Amino acid sequence: MAKKHFETDAIRAQMKRSENNEHSAPVYLTSSFVFDTAEEMRAAFNEESNDFIYSRYTNPNVDEFVNKVCIMEGAEAGVASASGMAAIYTSFMALLKSGDHILSCSSVFGATHALFTKYFPKLNISHSYFNIKDPNSIEKLIKSETRFIYLETPTNPAIELIDLEFVAAIAKKHNKLLIVDNCFATPYLQQPIKFGADLVIHSATKYMDGQGRVLGGVVVGKKELIREIYLYGRLTGPSLSPFNAWTLSKSLETLTIRMDKHCENALAVAEALEKNSALENVSYPFLKSHPHYAIAKKQMKAGGGIITITVKGGYEAAKKFMDKLQMIKISPNLGDVRSIATHPASSTHCKLSEEERLSVGITPGLIRISIGLEHKDDILNDIEQALK
Ligand SMILES: *Cc1c(COP(=O)(O)O)cnc(C)c1O
Image 1: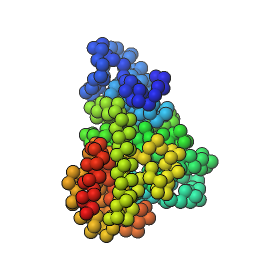
Image 2: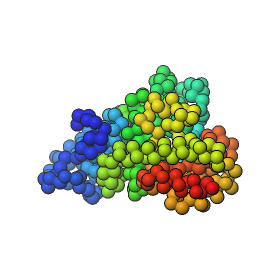
Image 3: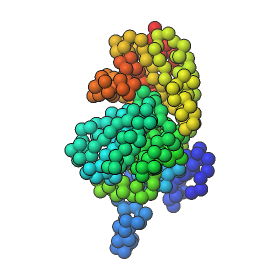
Image 4: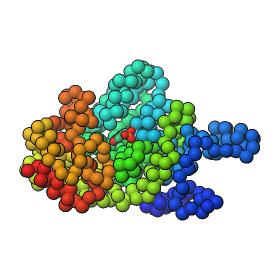
């Protein structure tokens, strides 16, 4: 399908209608598909065929969702999975072999860090971390065994950024792949392939659904890499369910207006909180005070929906603040229409040592707030009353 404006593709990149002429896409709750002849079934099993065979492989709803994300990210091909971690794990397993090395930013999602440190050593797959604050350290850490450079920008939860074009150029120079977890930005705000990334991974659970209902994941990028990931996934079965795929494809229809509002609310709340004397720090990519403001302006359309605040008084003060919130709920999730507060040091990042946490900007007083779509004054009022 020809590329139209982002908003239009988000709505109009839809599967072919069935003979029932439905306007909105139906859900294909079927585990398998039938063939008219033995010959047709034989032909479908050719690995180059696009026929639907079995929903562990793919399904019309899953295809619609993947095609839409490919258009949004400017990618050649994609594979969907049951969760963001399934997309990450399946991609890694399809691309890595014993002896390989991963060069990753240290501030990766907690479960990704656990794969690197707890499970991959068993497979003789090693990793090194670079600090996102120090992009010049990357090149020195590349080894001949390095298969890919892996990163998140903005990072979770410290909201630090790295110049995608800069890292992609290093990867290219050394003939390594660049894989980006683009979950925080969404394809609406940032398209890493434009800056040279080979693969882009999403937890669709977050902003893609945006309403806290379903889990899902997707990886998009170079055709030959996606082919490997698809074949590994169709054997091992981390498949996205047709219902979740339908939900996610519907959700993407409203991604742009939701993200515009998340960003507008987050910037307004962050700007107001910068003046609050109970806080040591407020971080948001589109605040002029953000150390990576120039990078944010270069590669992101807007700052996203996540802010962090650092309360004075460390963990005790952070706990008190969290407990005093009235409307905003305490939860590990993010990217929901409802605002959510998380204390990373005691929850999502509790498995890291104190030293590891501090190196990726997670101080005891740091609180991540996923700014929702409630009225910005109500979000701000709740935060301000809890800070008092
Ligand atoms: C949530 C998240 C994941 C994992 O996604 P799930 O859908 O929960 O498996 C990966 N990366 C980032 C940045 C995330 O926020």
